Image 1 (cartoon, rainbow, N blue to C red):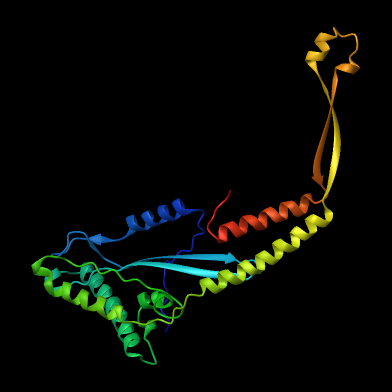
Image 2: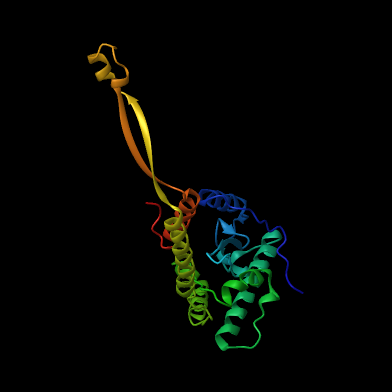
Length: 259
């Protein structure tokens, strides 16, 4: 049966600081305990998945996912001297890592079936290990001579991950080009409407000239008024606002920001 991630929480993110706050909150909640090998040993795996949903210029939904996985370290039960609750935690950690190793092995050998659903961990990591994804594995190992056995196992696992070939492509360039073409066509259409609707309009503004009024000692106030002509473009205010929104969206797509 498909593993279920009990206790998983989906939280709408407001901004980057909000994401950092949630990550720190999860870090504080992570269970740690002392073993004979590590005085602050992580007693579980931790995953943070960020899903970004965007709409391109053609109103098509584009969904991207970033998954950060902090895997618990593999410890030999004999060396860690774990008992009771610590022993159960270590077994669960090692079972998850074994399931991950089996999945990676199946991917490298080109097997027709990859056993993602043998573990909650591999079920959650499945999108990052298959399909159109790019995955980076960082191996953390101990430099101590006493931990050479665990270090070698970790490095061998890293080597195994390095030869996995995913079906990831780089659709972003073609998608960007298509989005820009659609956006540029809409910009050209709105610019045409602006040209067709806009016209110059002249306004007359009467402004009191205080210096002239003082010179005439208030005898002829009419002559103390200054007549100012102002010209401005009118008739396409809504189209101008729409055009500015489209131009701003185009700058964001190109990473240029506001100007």
